[in-house]
Image 1 (cartoon, rainbow, N blue to C red):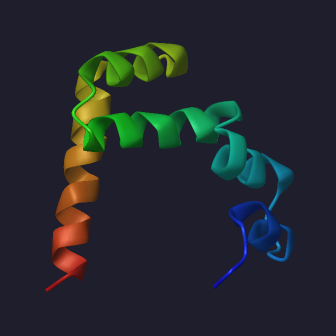
Image 2 (cartoon, rainbow, N blue to C red; image 1 turned 30 degrees about the vertical axis):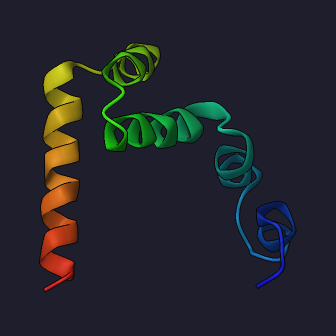
Length: 77
């Protein structure tokens, strides 16, 4: 596919909030996405930064990430 993410997202029926999160990491969804990306890269300072911006506890974040990881493993079987 030779389309940019921006061009592709314009063709999909997504809210502006979701598009902003995916393209520019805007809003709470963008912050959540950035938090997940930081976790994947073991950027713990970034995880802490985004966790605090979202007002989430460490336990809530790591529990949610563990659940997501378990779900991915379950789907890949």
